[in-house]
Length: 234
Image 1: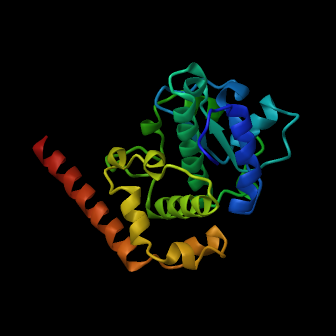
Image 2: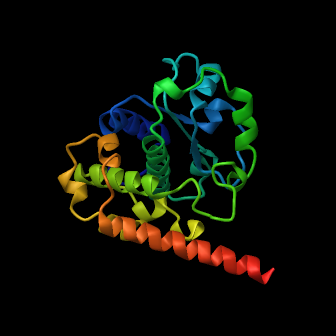
């Protein structure tokens, strides 16, 4: 996906054509404005096992049964806040991040409930840092090693097809108290190329490269030490 002036609906169409071949299954890609959901200002995108229930409710013509789903909060992207080129980079980074959640969470049609509308509407209206998956003193909760590994492989596979994505923008490592995604990418070494013929689930089910595992362990130990230090000062 070359970076050029953004037509958000056409760009969404590009991703819809790309995703099935990338992750091996269909995935809804919708906008918050289409679902009529009011999202907390910090939220840029989300995926959840019950999200396709909102697609069934708000976009019945597009509904093809329970499937993984990604929702992009499109208010800012349509507001003129970014240049067209900047909006394109941001849009792609959000999709990449949420797609990594789909892969890392092994979200398949079998685990997607047919009705979960109201709980999701309530959830997205709250600060995502307060969500059960992300709550707690460890800021990386919800973005563990499996997620980072999936993100790196998705980024590599897209870029190898000349579909450029910003890895740094898709992973706000300082917000999570972790090393940068670029460091994790480097720590994967030749795994990215060596396993590019495997499905992403097959890759993730294999042992992590030692350098990657050591980097993750060091990040976790540092964050735990930081939390303990803060508690001792209280």
